[in-house]
Every structure is written in structure tokens, then in C-alpha cells.
Amino acid sequence: MAMAAADTHVEKVNSREVSPGPILLLGAPGVGKGTQAKELMAKWGIPQISTGDLLRYHRDQGTPLGVQAKAVMDQGKLVPDDLVNQMVAERLKQRDTAEGYILDGFPRTLGQAKWLDRHIGADPTALPVVAVSIQVGYTQLLRRITGRRTCPVCGTIYNIYLQPPKVDEKCDLDGTSLVRRSDDTEEVFQERMRTYESQTAPVVEHYRALGRFAEVDGEQPVDQVAADVIAAVARLRSGTGGH
Image (cartoon, rainbow, N blue to C red; front, side, top):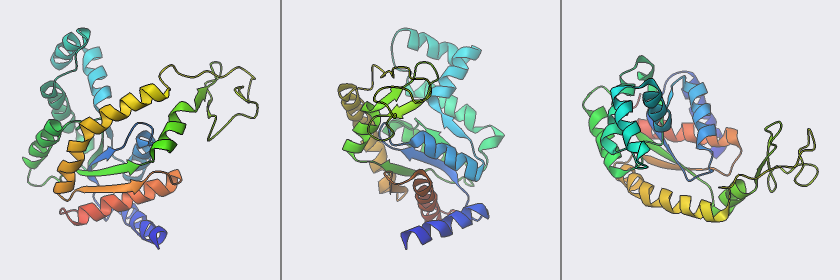
């Protein structure tokens, strides 16, 4: 039954009966947010807005915002919310965001979430943000991260637990010894999880309290996760003035 419900919503999306509007994808490191963002971009033809990309663009282009951000980053400090908010506001003026967009890495804090709601709410015709959290169990996430291996020659990525090479720790294509990224350790993963949970918990509760939050099971095949995310967006939109 769940599958049929998801399929129904996919058909609605394909027939443009659902306006996606701004979508915040949430999830711990390794849940597959990037993969799902690509699925949504293809389905709806909307852009992904990444604060990392915005920071790099402004820094590399030497814009006034980029110059300010670079000065902060050169000191090893985090770029303040106000600067990030201004970059996002500028990006949202571009035409390709009219039908909606996928937010990546923003809003990361409660302050950013409240600013975004106010900024979008200034336009009475704009749809509000809906947040969808992709849920994957700790053990599965740990296996995804710590099991990751890469061939230094051809760049093929393996996972010793989930997609192992035919010969242990050797690339199937050229026999090269696989390498592990220095930060793909349980200790680094645990620290990233603590940071994610402390920052994101208030954002989750903010959108949950507004009735604009849903969770999907991220341990399913990619296509089914995508169908469930789309179905969740459609349900949330039906309750927030979506059409």
C-alpha cells in the first residue's frame, strides 16, 4: 500500500499538480542527501542551493560579500549568519528559483531558519519551506562511512561492507591497492554526528512545530527513498497552501 501511495504522488509531480517550492533536505552525514537532491532536481527541474557553493563563488569572484567572507575564513573562523543570509537572499532573486529549490547546508541553525522564514514570508505569494529528514540508523551510517575505499588510479569507489571489491582491498579494474580517506574513521564520524545533532535538532523542532516536517526511511533503495521524499513534499504542501 505504501508503494502505491508513493507512486500516486510521483504521477502528480510528473503532471505538475504539485508545486515543490523551497525544500530543506535534512539528514546526518552519509544518509544520501546529495543523491536525493539530484533526484529532486531531475524530477522538478529546480536548482540546488548549497551554501558551500555560494561561499566559493563569492570568494572566487571577489564580490563584496566574498571579500568579507574570505577575511573571516582566512582567520579560521566560521562565516557569520548575516553574511551567509545575504548570499542566500541574493541567490533567491535569480529566476531559476521561481518554481522552488532544494536547500543544501542551509538553514543549519535555528537563527538561519527563522531568518529564512521571514525572508520568504515577505512575499505573500511564496510557498514556505518544507523540511524532509532522511533517516538512516547509526550502524548503517557507520558502515557507509568507515567502509568507504577509493582506487587512487581510476577513482572507483567501493565499500568493504556494502559494495566490496572482488579481491579484498584491491580495485576490480586495475588491481591497485585501495585507499581510505583519513577522516573516514569512527572517531571523526562520531564528532560529525554530535555537531550535526546539536545544530540541527532545533531546526527540526522549529519546522515540526510549524507542521512543515516529515521523515522518510533512508535505508531503502535510492528510487524508493526518492518516491517517499516526493510523497512527503506533496503531503506537506497540501497542508501549507501547496497546489
